[in-house]
Amino acid sequence: MLETHISELSVTATNLTEENLKLKEQLQSLQDNFHENEQKSRLCNVEIQNVPERKNENLLQLVSNLGTLLGVVIPAESIKAVHRVAHNTHTDRPKNIILQLNTKHLRDDVIAASRVRRGLTAGQLIAAGGPSNASSRSGSDVIQSDRIVYIREHLTLRNKLLFSKTRSIARDKYRYVWTKNAIIQVRKNDNSPVMYIRSEKDLSKL
Image 1 (cartoon, rainbow, N blue to C red):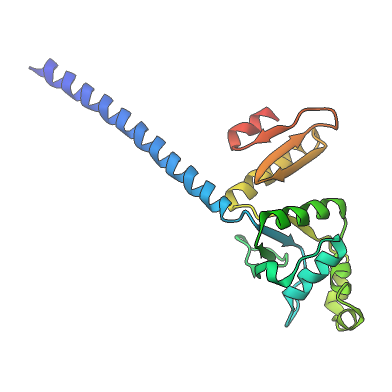
Image 2 (image 1 turned 90 degrees about the vertical axis):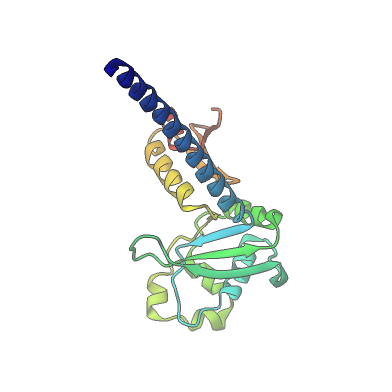
């Protein structure tokens, strides 16, 4: 009788373990789907980083300046929204600017042009608005004018963290680390194949 009871308990424990594993797999699948949809919702977005915040700033004008410097026409009617977003952790860096465009094609043009125009500074971005705009800068603006402005795809927090880890690990081994359509890509040199980093498991490839 006792042996039968122990056997039944063993079967129950095995069933519960298998059920738990299935639930974990289902939860992971739901989380992955949610993250994928969250990233898709940012498909037409550009994230502009390291632009000093200014009182009464005109972000639409700043976007126009950016288009001028990059050689990409960004019509006002192609802009769905532009706003700053707070960082997820405490930092002294300026809030990032999220530019929501109407089409992915224009988003891709802006990002491609920014990769050609590397080294763009906040001072150049502000000055592109004309003499009156540049002359109205405060002393703080002048001090921060040499900040390098970064223009990137608008990644989810999960992808941002993965991108940061990838760059940290690849820093001394790989020449290129970038994202394309929210997929992190790594290349050792001009002649080597591209490696794709889609999850933390892929970091072991580096």
